[in-house]
Amino acid sequence: MALVRSLTLAGAVALNFATGAWAEEVVVFAAASLKTALDGVAAQFEVSTGHTVTISYAGSNALAKQIVEGAPADIFLSAAVNWMDEVEHSGLIVDGSRANLLGNTLVLVAHGAGAAPVTLDQSLDLKAMLGDEKLAMAMVDSVPAGQYGKASLKTLGLWDAVAPSVAQTENVRAALALVSSGEAPFGIVYASDAFADPSVTVIGTFPQDSHPPIVYPVALLTGAADPADKSFLAALTSPAAAALFAAQGFDILN
Image 1 (spheres, rainbow, N blue to C red):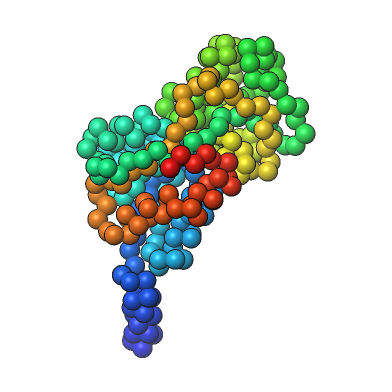
Image 2: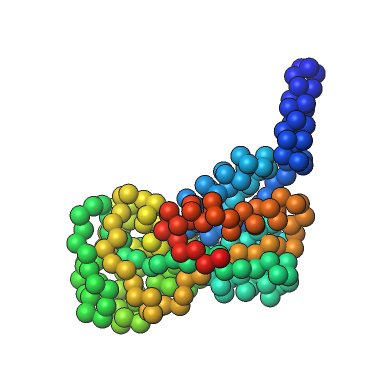
C-alpha cells in the first residue's frame, strides 16, 4: 500500500511539474443555460492545465444569492446583468474583472419534430395553441430566461391571456426538460438550450426589441485565491472557448 501511495504521489508531482504548478480547483457558479458549452470549455482547460473545474449550475438569481450569502465560488457567470450587479454591489467582485462574455436569443420551442413555425407578434393566439396545456418557462419574476420571456409576452400583448397557463421552473434547463419530455407542448427558452436538445423544435424567435438585451456577464470573485482561477477566466475568452460557445448558439461579445 505504501508503495502504491508513493507511486501515486510521484505521478501527481510529475503532472504538476509538467503543468508548471500544483493542480488547483476552480469553482464556477454558472447559469444553467451555459451547461453544454461550458462543460466543453472546462474539459479543454482541465486537459491542457491539469487543474480541476467544478461547476455549479442553477438559475442566476439563486447563484447570486448563494454568493452573497458566502458560498465559496471563484467565478460567476450570470445570464443577466442585474444578478451580476447584485454580487458587485455586495463588494464580491474583483475590480476590473467583470466583462460581458456572451449574448443569446429567446425562442419558442415545441415538443418533438415537425411542429409548424409561427410568427411571434401581436396576432399570435398563443392561448389557443396551448388549449388546456402548459407553457413551460423559468420563474418569470426571478430567473433571467423567465424574466426575458415575460417581458416579451407583455410587449406583444400576449401575457395576460397565457399567464394562468404558465408552468414555472427553477431554471431554464428545467423548462426545456418539460418540453423535451412532452409534459408541456411549448416552452420559452434560449436558442442555445434548444440547440442542445434534439427533442424540441424552435417554432419562433422573439423580436429582440421585445425584451431587454440578453447578456451573460462574467467576473472573478473576491474569494478566488489560486492562479488557476485567473487562468480559467482568461480561458473563457479564448478563441477555443468562443468556438465552443458559438457552436452551441451563443453570440460572442468579448
